View 1 (cartoon, chains in turn cyan, yellow):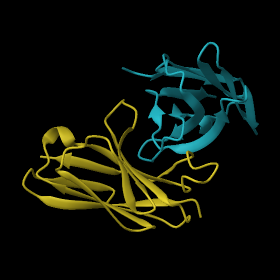
View 2 (view 1 turned 90 degrees about the vertical axis):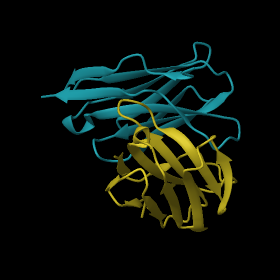
View 3 (view 1 turned 120 degrees about the vertical axis):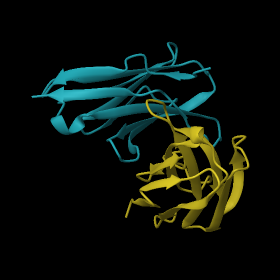
View 4 (view 1 turned 180 degrees about the vertical axis):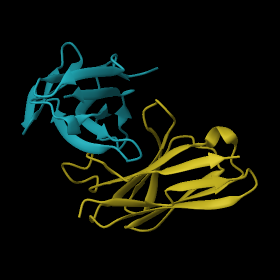
Length: 112
Length: 116
């Protein structure tokens, strides 16, 4: 049972435009959400997070939006740069658990 | 220093071999994790250590044996593995579970394991 889903396996965006990556979850106990970026042959790199008490968190070019009623979160990257090309995973945590549940990932390609 | 290091980068082993994966962090983190990642799949949690004690074992077969000798080091001992255990093994660390941001995990580059 996949509790965190990223329904778009891939996304292509032109440099300078906005990239929007989406993530849906089913477990209403999740209260903290994170986005990771992964380059080939490297481990995932933490990007940005959001608590369930907020609906938006911004860090430079990256903004995460959370819609609790829809059980949906999204990562916006503005403006997109070629170095943003990577696989993006969303992850979620429930309560005080140490465990993160990851989505299946979305491969973003930023073209020139 | 926000780096988690893992050795070796690549490992090929036979089903009768015994080998170990190593992970090190110097961020003062008190929680460390082992994940397994198969191609085109998300990372799957295997073990969690908190303050050098095993706190979570996600029903991992006993042919995988974790060890946390101190707060900076995490090992994964491998014995009698199967070909289906071939995967990328990722180590991660985070602040102690009493910290507000303990769920932000920092990953190493992984060890690519092939079992023949």
